[in-house]
Amino acid sequence: MRERIPSPPGGRPTGTSFTAVGRRKRSVARVLLQPGNGAFIVNGLPLEQRFPRASHQSAITLPLRLTNRLGQMNVLAKVVGGGVSGQAGAIVHATARALLKSDENNKQVLRESGLLTRDAREKEREKYGLVGARRAKQYTKR
Image (cartoon, rainbow, N blue to C red):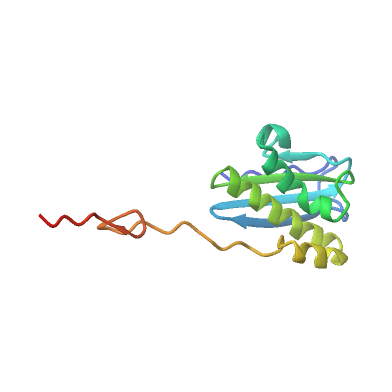
């Protein structure tokens, strides 16, 4: 069942909020970016509770730090699929895209940091007769 990103009080998102979709590995994140006090809510939980690892927290806040919007924007994210690192990467991608929608002047700094590029690397499927994706079974001579 698809869950919706909560809208601000009063119904529909205002003209100052921006949405974007980001992907990484098997994860898909939908982000709603709106003016506020800098709150990060991911799947209904605060950022620190949903991503306890500091490296994930710093990666997720990177787009806002690069554009000097860290304490000025609220980020509401809904992320599904994949693992913790893939979900963090998907949120980074979606947040960068939403910041680009909010202000085109952010494009150069986000592009130089590689935040607008979708990392297309996926896990390779396992083939029959092999151990994993590529390794062949060990050959025995006798």
